[in-house]
Image (cartoon, rainbow, N blue to C red; front, top):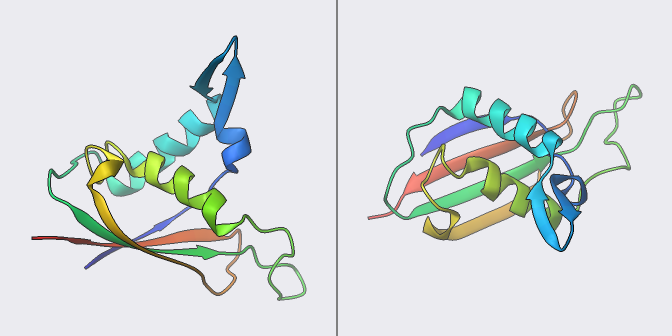
Length: 118
């Protein structure tokens, strides 16, 4: 199992921009995907994968988890799209997902563990 610590994801509401009946990826989303590509690299595999994703809330100055935290389902689509072209060719290769909140960390984060399925 391989592990990556990724930056805290942007909201799915900010990921897509709607323009004249079309949905396009926002500049913010392009920047986030670029960050992911630097961390993960661009060597997508063709196999099915199993993902374990932990959304790590932002740590406040008082040492507690921020009350402002993405919903798990909101971060999931952003994470799957951001990993496409880096970890796997297409997000339909993801066959199993474990998704949960983790412990808060400075600036928040997204802990991704993946395993190639045979």
